Structure formats: C-alpha cells, structure tokens
Length: 414
Ligand SMILES: [Zn+2]
Image 1: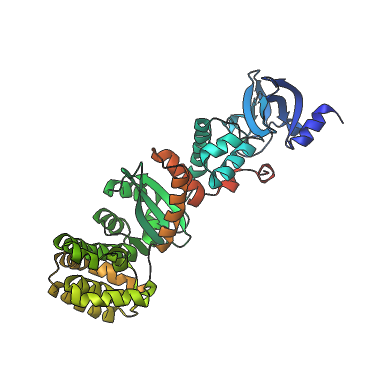
Image 2: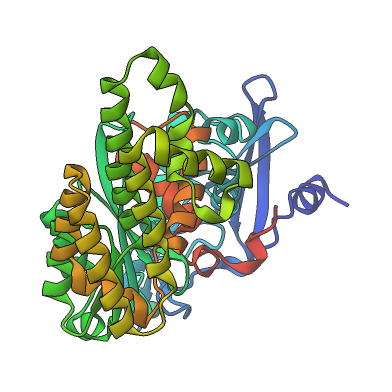
C-alpha cells in the first residue's frame, strides 16, 4: 500500500484523493494536498457536472480534525465551472461547506463537544484557540439557522433570562409542544418581542397559534395578543405563585422589623416554610405554622390565605374556579394586609388570563425545564458577557435546529 493510500485510510478521507503530504512546524502539523474524488467539478446547487471555465492556482486551506495532537490541514485550488442551470459557479467541495475554513468533520465535532462542555474545554481538545472556536461555532449556528423555517407552532411560551451577572436581559421564545427554544433576542421589552413576531413568523403561522404562556409583563401580553388573533393567553402559574409568595414574605419581613429579639426567635426559619407548597410540608411544619395563630396572627392570616390559594389550580370548571377566586380575593382584601391587596389588584388585572389556566392546564413548566438546562450551560462557562456566544450555546443545546441536515452523513464520524 502506498503512503498516500495509507494516509487516506487512517484519516478516513473517503470523498477525496491525497496527492501530496508534508509536515510542518516541527511535525506538529500535517499538510495534505488533496482533490475531490473522481475529479469533482459538480455544481454546489444541483450536483450536475459542469465544464471547467477557470482553473486558479490559488490554494485554499481547510482545517480538519486533529489527530494524535497533530493539526491536519487540507490544501486545494477550487475550479470554476459552468453549470447549465446556475451559470458560472465554484465547484462543490465535498469535505467542507461553501466559504468555510474548516471541514464538515470539524464542524460536527465542535457541535458535539460544545453540547457537553465549555467552549474553552472543547478548544483545548481540538487544539484551537478559544476565540477561534467560538467564531467557528457562531458560523455553524448562523449557517444552520439561516433559511431555517419554524415548523407548525401552536403553543408558544415567552420568558426572560438574565446574563452578564444579572445586569442584562434576553427574551426567549419556546415552542412548548416540542420543548425547543425558537428564538433568543436581546432585551425584554415590547420591541424585542415584536421583532420575533415580525421576523420569524408569517401571518398564517401567527393565526395558527392558539395557546401562549407568559409572565405578567405588559410588554409580552400586549405583543402576543396583538400579533396572534386566535390566541388564548395563560398567565404562567409559576409567576402567579411567585408573586403571591413575595406578598406573603413581605408580611413576614414587616413583622420581623417590628419585633424584638424574643419575638424574632419565635418566627425564625419561616422564610422557606411560608413559600413551601403544602404537599412538601411535614407534620411538624404544619404544627409550627398553626401555632402562629396565637403568637403572630398577621403572619398566620397571610399563610392561611396563601395555602387556600393552592386549591385554585385544581379546579376543572371555569365557573366554579371563578367563584372560588372571587371569594378568595374578598377574603384577602378583608385581611387588611397591604401587600396582599396589591396582589389582588394584579389578579384583577389578569383575571381572564389566569382563569384560562382552567381550560388547558398550560404552564411554562417546559420552558422552566429548558431554562434549567440553559442555566447549566451558563454556569458551566461561569456566565456570558455577550449575548451572541450565549445565544449560540442556547441554540446548540435546546434550540430548534437541525444540524445533521447540514452535514453529510458519511462525514458525521467522530
Ligand atoms: Zn447547478
């Protein structure tokens, strides 16, 4: 077996022919002069063979997967051909996408590694500088996302995430049926969410959205109802409960400030107990909370109201749920606790959208699950300063992307 054939076999370069090889940089780089197998000369659009019209001598370089700590670089001078349909084009390169500086195999490896580790760790394995790797990943993600059409969406979820140490925000749009992130955009205002609807969805697609879930932010609610004529908006349960818990916690804080050391001791450890769902409480917890009836009536009142509110989520019929909610609101107003009154005000504003939960028990739970994965990605990298890199990683791990469709199957070897 000749050296060239052996090299081709070891490197598993099936779609091309090695014409020459040399080592560089103290044997740390293996350079290969290659050409497409069976002469190539195919149109990248339609795959038909074309006549060569221009033969350049200018060599182009592609980086391939490193082997045994040795970088592998491919060299070739692409020809220009004339396709009967597409005119004068550059011939198709079987081992790399058009205009790319790296091979399909390296792209595939970058995507696979970045899904399970930080870009820094992946860069070390692939013998690339970290900044180069993030640029390469950005190119792959951009290419895959370009021309990608969002498939039939009927249930939309919108939420915000923070990055840059919690100083900046981004809006995430989910497809809650398929549990994928459809879009990531900077900011959390109306113009951000408007951009998603204007750029990513056609009029027909907007009309087909029947359910949507979001928090109580006015920007999101108004945008969703403005763009989707047939939508039923459900306020996310998680956010309602969070607002209620905050209102109850305010009562605890206010009492804490007013009490002396002795009194403070009596309500110690309440912070987590108050926000805990009744399902997770032990008997001891409940006994402690019940004892507050005598020691601290105000906190006890707030807790009882909070606990009663949990029943709302179990209702099956809208009318009875509404009766329950109205009664609860009256009781909360009577408690004369200002923070709970504010919460009742919020409930009143969003009443129809909160009651919509009874018709379809839709929550952002899927979105929260995706957020957990996103948080892992974020923490793994110790946070992101720029949304671009963060968005790439979000699309890569939980995005609505079809990366395999853009990389030929025989080159997806690892
Ligand atoms: Zn063609």
